[in-house]
Image 1 (cartoon, rainbow, N blue to C red):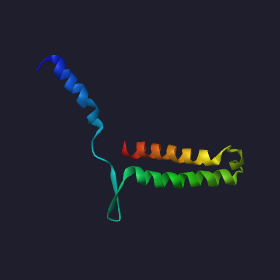
Image 2: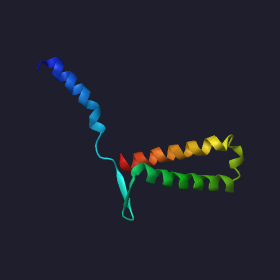
Image 3: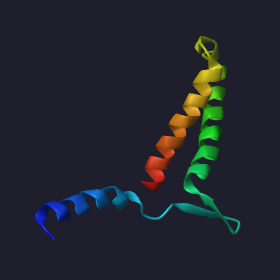
Image 4: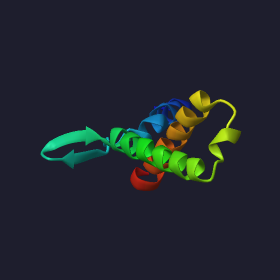
Length: 86
């Protein structure tokens, strides 16, 4: 095998290095994907943020809550997944 073929083979295998195990969490004997656990926690965190904003009357300043709160859930989900499983 020449150097060009081996380097091409090595470069094609490089993206597969990120394909290791899928993080699963066991809850009462059932295994759930890590992202699903982070999603549930993110929905709870968004509820807490909403309660804090509502107690300070700051929720009125949010322009489009139907867009802001789902975006907040996505942000919290990704951050939790990165902090816990990455």
